[in-house]
Length: 186
Ligand code: PRP
Image 1: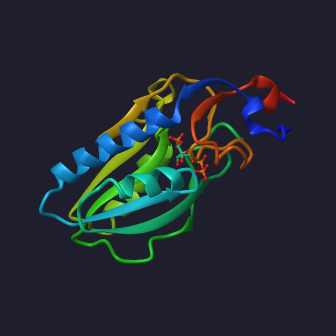
Image 2: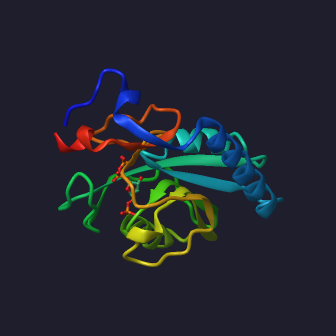
């Protein structure tokens, strides 16, 4: 993999601009605040891709909330395809029994990671568990799972930015763009 020094050069189409993302995050925050009014929330972010989304979303939710972080990796797959086998690299740092949990993801692709995580977290007896994903790529879905809050449905393109990486690079782009084939074919 060879990335340019100016990461913008590796991006073709800009799928979602910084402004579009900002407006959507505000909208999601309002909906979540209304839906959970009078309750307390635990946001669980799945590292690393959801880091910018989590940081922005939590500041648009007007409720008492706690955050926790998990990190998982799928193994047995390739750089671009998940295998469905999920390994927990970092587990929750506090119990969630009897708590309202909102799982925060950057993207739902095959759904395999989320499917595993929901079942895993249900085993910890939360009062409720819902999912908020910035991006949904329905064309790639292998397992049907309910996503309660979706930012954008996107086509089956190789997207990077706003947390999404290729080879751990591009996460810091402020927009979501389509990676040029030259950047991943070399
Ligand atoms: C991405 C994303 C989800 C998962 C979705 O994480 O954050 O966790 O893939 O894919 P799926 O629906 O096909 O299971 P990734 O494994 O790329 O790790 P990262 O967040 O550290 O980039």
